[in-house]
Length: 231
Image 1 (spheres, helix red, strand yellow):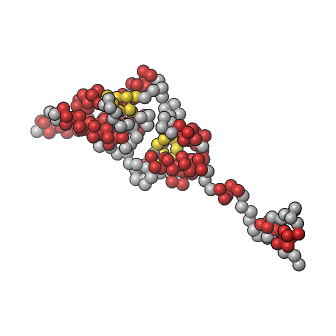
Image 2: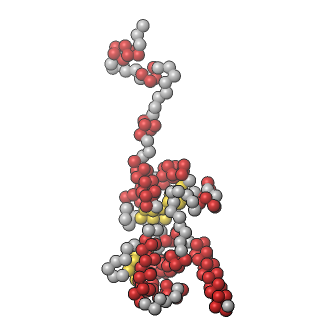
Image 3: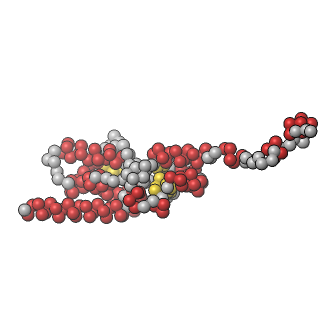
């Protein structure tokens, strides 16, 4: 009685699939052995590492985000994460899928940076977003970089917070806050002209809801300070 190996040896030009010839064996398709697409893996890893992808910095990866959006979201789905795209401003970012996560759990998601800022950080963020909105109104969405001079930002900052009495200390405090916000992907390094580039992600990080919360905090603080002064 011949077995499968005898059949293969006798019929070199008409080979028999050994998996199909063995009862109960399951064929494995090429797709099942290749794993996650290399491009999709690259996008997912970059999002998990940086949190966002800018077209101006990585144009090829950003284009892949657009063409592989569905596949990337399938790869991120087990983690309750999503790829979000703003093709007009040229930015892609990682977001929590709110459909699968409760309001309380969203901030404690282990793969997404907590976006709880201090009052000072929130104020500077609001000032930067205002400059970004004004820039887009004058130049169009995604048409050019939004550059803000530290010297222009400082008087606005001092409008809301007490002047330390020292120009150097005031500027140092502002530079410290800008450096902290840099880790959130909303501003660049300060260049030789003492200017920062406001990045397009700010349009989605500093949304109207978060700015309304900032306004409420400022109003509450103002009431507390007024009450303390009266006492």
